[in-house]
Image (cartoon, rainbow, N blue to C red):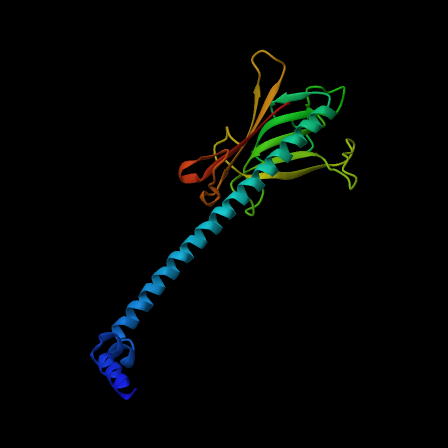
Length: 220
C-alpha cells in the first residue's frame, strides 16, 4: 500500500495539472477570466437594453395609435350630431374660440340655421401648440365641453383643448380632410411624427431625421 501511495505522489509531481492545482491560477489567467466575464456581461446587458427599447417603442406606437383612433371617433360622432360639415373652412370672427394663427381644418355646424358653420360650431384646427409642454404642432378642438355623463351640451360654453400633439411641422399635415371624387364622403387622415425611439414595425414608416410617421384614416 505504501508503494502505491509513493508512486501516485511521484506521478502527480511529474504532472503539470497537479503542479498548477497546487499553486492555483496565475494573475494573467485571473485577469483573462475577469475580462471575459466583463465582455459577456456587457453583451447580455446590451441585449437586455435593446429589448427594453424595442418594447418601449412598440408600447408608445400602440398608445399613439389608440389616441388617433379616439380622436377620429370623436370627430365622426360630432359630425353625426351636427347639421353640416365644412372641410378647410375660412376663418370666421363669430367662432367661439380664437385660432391664434392655427389653420382650421374642419368645422361642424351646431345650428340648423347655420349649416355652413360660420357662427356657433365645433372647429378643429392645426398649428402651433399653446404651451411648450406639447411636442411640435397640435390638433385642437374648439367646442362645447362634455359632461361627466359623457354627453355634450351643444348650448354650453365652448372650450379650446389639445387633442393630439407631435403633428408634422408642415402646415399641410396633421389632420387632412379629403373629399371623395365620386361619392359624398370625406376621408379623414390623421398624421403624427413620433420620435425615432418609437420606431417599430407594423403601420409606421420612417420619417427620416424627424422620426417615425404614424397615420390613421377614417371615413366621414
